[in-house]
Image (cartoon, rainbow, N blue to C red; front, side):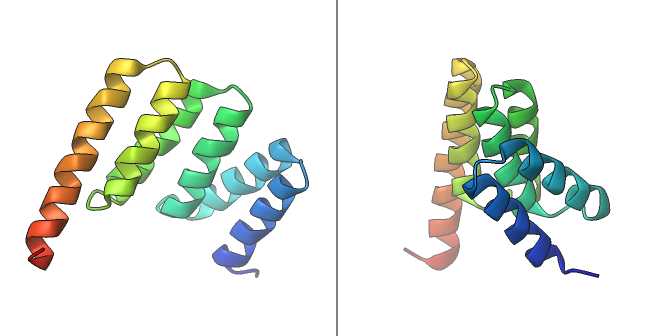
Length: 111
């Protein structure tokens, strides 16, 4: 069986060739087997946003935040996805969470 990383790379390659729908389907299949694969959720949120499927994109971006709660970038990405979906209040909330996660990370590392 092909590794999760290899399957993810195949989805990215499909996207790079302009086959966004095929990339989405490959990522969905991957997530059926490994629902906690945050990188696949992140890519899926971007690709779904490109297809104008903003509600689904936001849900996958939220999933990344749940899986990677300590990573400020997860919340920044959610904020951007929400902005594209016209969900400004949610985008602002996500950016606030990004700042909090960044502050917490700085406290942990002593910066």
